Image (cartoon, rainbow, N blue to C red; front, side, top):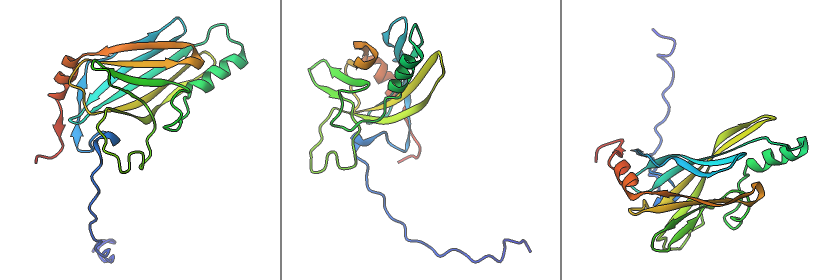
Length: 200
């Protein structure tokens, strides 16, 4: 007999249905996304770049990975520490979007969305039509005395079926308003690669 054979069984627990997650909140948890070939430079200078590294397309929206990196120039030790500290882009509230890295999406028809961190009650009792651009947090980073790099993830809902423009600005780091066009063809092609984890 195995040592584990005579252990008491755990009592059965009732299964609790999970509430449906609204589409604006984040990507579906049961989908393998298609990858959109949308990577490119949103901003580039001799010292700082902001790049769109990856676009993951889901049936309901798109998840963008942005990377910002800076290399040290003639900054003093204190000035470089300030650049590194600013580059962390610490999370702000949904009401404080004009500090740190500003990220937005614009549509050809004039609609736009600006990234913010939305709490669970951000849209309580509201009929959300979209578009909504949500900050989902960062993917880590690194820095030393010569180089700093960080990443951030942004969820766009609903998935645009038209050309859209990704817009960034970071005044504290001297990054002016800069943009990168995301083509409808790129997003549509990636949508064809979306796969459900389980068949309906």
